[in-house]
Length: 421
Figure 1 (cartoon, rainbow, N blue to C red):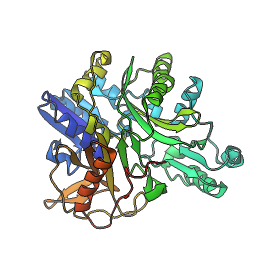
Figure 2: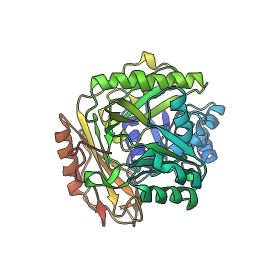
Figure 3: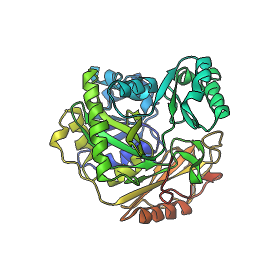
């Protein structure tokens, strides 16, 4: 099989790495890819949002399966375009991708179908939002409605911070058109967990649990980021909670999608808060999460191509998905200053070979003059397996300690501190 993976981050590197393990795969392309992905796939200079360019490439290179990593091409309708040309593609269509593309839509969807979530209100007008925010109590959560690369969520501790967030999104257009509408929510207390599920339109099969660390600094301080690391399984996520999530959230979502005549096939991400009143849904993502993918796929034992085929063919019930009992931890190495301003173009030194139990995924790297250099905010994701979270954690940090680049930064408590935001 010839495979095309769309995207350029650590998630896509993990997908390419796992796909390359399938004996069914002959050639892997990645558009646009990055410095690390280029070691195991042919990187193609086509941007992830260039739908026409990607379609032409897939048609001219006999691509048997396209795998979409990031959310933007899904929201732009790449699945619909490819399917019209009779190309097999893994991911939800444009109508289904709205679960992530609009937080206002997804909150209304949850409320309509009694899927447990935080109390909320959608706002299209800045002044109305400012007049009503005190009614939610503090802290409260403010979300940009549209796609904001994982950075459109702000937890405001008081009215001053809430005013700044609302003005930043709605007046200053900090996140562009994504902040034209905002969602204001009550702040839920509890432990976070992430559940990715394969969905074939009829059934959903949850993957092993994960938990990511969103805040930039140790002890869950600093700004929200796209993720500074992750563990799998999630702390505090037991069999009893898993069953409640399956019945009250995952299965309800699948049935609600059917009721709305939304055909969802791909991966659906459930961001959860485990509260004293039970699990509640924070958000949906219409694709593999990042950096959760870099720990979850480390534990997957079943051929990923077989699973993706089953999803596309609505045959998930016929496949037995197996997972390693090992624990996984990943640590993200970032450019100093991320998620705000940062410099790039620095050489990365100290790479060590990947092994069965430890892999360095590239999130934002490039090759220049034969050297691997930094090319974004989240630069590397070091993943490791162990019989315990502690063992996996020690292996990951051992690799991290050997690599370096100018202004490199990473959290020191991934897998150690159990309470992530």
